[in-house]
Length: 458
Length: 162
Image (cartoon, rainbow over all chains, first blue to last red; front, side, top):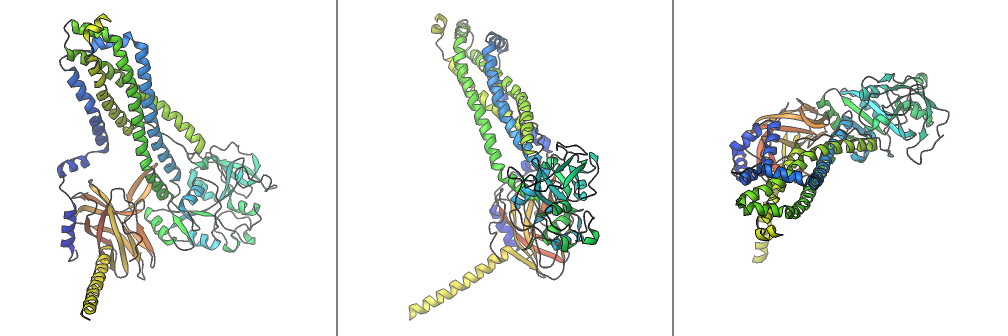
């Protein structure tokens, strides 16, 4: 420790305030599951406490059950409104989480990507999510330097730019296919520059032949590579990523159809995959780099971060994007709660009107000598029953909404999104229930102060 | 004449103070051992029992150095961890040691490498500082760790050259 340690320690302690260490330590020592369950219980606690206080000493439930049955269709409408509101709210928050996990899962196989200097986000979108982009090419010298590094176990060129009926055609190596897919779902990896392996969701079959278009999208030039037909020889396992809709061909084939060298000296013209001859290497926009150990990936990142190269971790770039979107998630949660509370406020306003329907019965109760607090507990329990039932059914609606939205998002993005309701959503619903049963005290008070005589006569 | 002398003296004192202040400022943000520099160590404020410390390591020596971990009186353990995505979830895993080549820089930064302090003895509050040692194969470097906001993404002096 340096001589200034004492000064720094004092400075640090001055910067800290007093703290309830025991409570913090206890909380930190709890398993995550216990923390989630406790937060859920804490959010639900106000509702439970209000319920205990309001019904203490009385049994309002038989009367409430009768009220629920008497106006069942109106009650069902109110319950449905709350359920749909809660369901959509929790469905959206679960979806956001599912999308985050889906995009992260899609990027997992891309440990380290090396490209020419530029935007990490743009190149991640191109190399990992196959979004078309014009990118400078890396030379054969650079490729061989990377592939020959002691720490590198896989260096795969990723050469994009062509397509077939909207599916990106990507030039790479057989090693990359096995890295991405593991064992193939069927068939084998390409063995010549006229063979292709398709992603799990590509609408082609083994044995089918096709010619790639030059470019991707509406401006792709059909027939630009006429005469170079690929034959499908294998299909990859599903990866849950846009690569499921990709067609993988030897990188040598991509170069050849563009009239470039094959990556190998003339005496090795038929060779596929590394090693490549730098002199005959036309270039690749990106290289996937993988090391066996995590530490080596970081060492490689440091090695290949320099003026002429950009090395980046897609996982890091994605996590930073997710972090930026963290505020959006909070806004979404708040919006969900606000929407639900507004719907419930509307329902409660309806309840105030509905209690007018009960007013004669409630006035009769009071005329017969029922305590005011009993009438209060009847009205509140009735409202709480609608809210509670709506909230529980809302979780069911949320499950259905989540599944439907996941399917739609997966279909549009080619990223497998698997969302399910979790503790976050349960806590959201618990908070909603507590807040709205507190609001439900209002119609109970309003019912309490209705004129008994007028209601009896009216 | 007297006024000019007084002004010159005042200027000299002010200049000296500025130099001292700049050196002091550099002392806070840069530590060095045999050509290896640790610049802008920082962490996020937390009331939890773990924290990640980030710092830029510059290897100005002519040999490969290994970052191996750290020590801190404020935590039970310090280990070097690396970020990765695992089953769609972000995780930090222990990485043992990481080599830094001569003339290269290794950034310990959010969602990358970090030094994970476990068993924090006190919460870390924004604006505070504490001292720890980063362990290399060539020895240890004392660094002053600035405690930034809980959602900070960089040291508040990031971008300043030292």
